[in-house]
Amino acid sequence: MSDQDRTPENPLRRELPEEVPAAPADPQEPQEGGQEQERLSGRQRLVKGLWPPRASRAQLIVAVLLFGLGFGLAVQVASNSDSDSALRGARQEDLVRILDELGDRSQRLGDEKQGLEKQQQELENSSDQAEEARRQTVEKERQLGILAGTVAAQGPGITMTIEDTKGTVRADMLLDAIQELRAAGAEAIQVNGVRVVANTYLTDSGKSVSVDGNKINAPYRFKVIGKPQDLEPALNIPGGVVQTLEKEQATVTVERSDKIVVDALRAAKQPDYARSSSQ
Image (cartoon, rainbow, N blue to C red):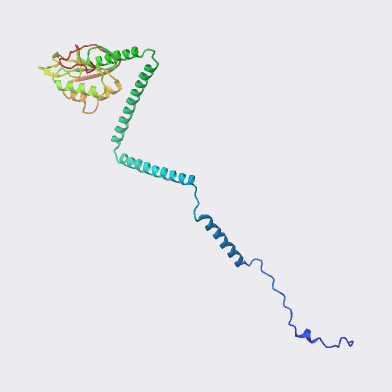
């Protein structure tokens, strides 16, 4: 061993502590301070963007319109709910009757609308409106004449024959038949050659019946102009005209026809006091 090897160790080197290697940083350890600062700054930016609210005039108008629309829809839904609840509690027979009435009413209104539109078009397209007005006046007079019984009429309808061999059919039974036919839409009625009008009356005359003072005998033959699909069922309803007459041992026959002729006429009666207000 050389002299240099035996040289004593440097005392300054002995006094220094041993170097401790620095622990490596954990890459997965979150840096809480930086993230917290970043999160707080994002929240502050969100609050600053939402408050105070900034809305233009157009946005306010749109908001008011949307509110009004929503309120209207809510009221409509509530109204429909009330109607649905009322119909939901109705019986099946009532619902069927309501549906039939609505269908008939809609059909009548539709026909009336078409007639009025046709009249309007004819008046607008006619080169001589005065002539068209006179033509419509004549047509209206003819229709009123049919109702008053002063002119003959023809059209689809039914023929009802009542055989009364027992003589049990009374005037009130025939009157019920006339009223039932009128309610079903009869436009012209004739009984054994006597025209039935608005002021027609029936009375008992022994075993026969008198219509407006004209005595008629069985069989009683009704000639009725109207819609056959409505007239016949009206007579055959349970407890109706046909069943009442059959209980009195009378025989009732109802026949539909595409052409019924009602040719019995009534004399036009001149009023004694009433005058047209247009004169």
